Image (cartoon, rainbow, N blue to C red; front, side):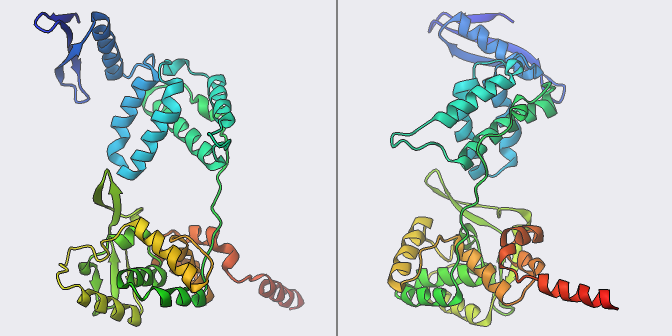
Length: 357
């Protein structure tokens, strides 16, 4: 359709008709273009997006990708994805037609990222390179699966980097008790770490807890939300996975401790956050406590590993531990296999008995 000029402010605008996903005819107006060429280009791209024509530019398809998936994932996940897309992918592929991007182009992009060094001469980590490539491949996969793109050139190029699991550290029960002793000077810190260690919660799950989540008659705590700090605001979201929605049985001593802590808070309402502190506060407190207690420094998430280690030492199965932590049992088996007692000798002995019978 033609574009029009607004004689009053000397800018151009577009009136375009299109059919939406429900088959309804609609009209859209876009104003404020400085030149006729800009207005025509916007109209061309808009119509390509509406028809999902793969002759559109990569950045135009990214707009479609955003609209398709943003509402389906957590905001924290989305912020990570969009940062990678805008900083590491669009500057290279943005103006290219998505249908014309070839495997050799992806390889050239990979090489550029792998050669990158920051001001201190450090390259991107192997794990980060893998994450960047996975995001590019996810965009192409979306185009292939839903918009008739012929192939995914990123898949053919193969990944760069590799997945690297951080070293799994944990405290023994003795180390934790030394740490807990020195934290008793600050009740909010002490009780927060008690819940983390003895229940194996994720940090976001801890910071979202309210008095209403506790049932002191049955000594349970219900995990059904997670705390995040986004755009300078406190945000309560659903837990990390569906499996993360769970009810945890607390030990009697921990149940009594939490009751004592709640009774200290004179104006605490049922829906108020039990621990109205930040992640950075707890990181600083953990640093302080480890130093004063003379125990090795571990990450806050390692308290979750410490809880698993304790449960394995007490003889609980991967299935039981997974249910408590909100994991799949196969993930517990894979990640903590080295901590489970070996059954090899027992297996060999029983095979000897079978052979002799």
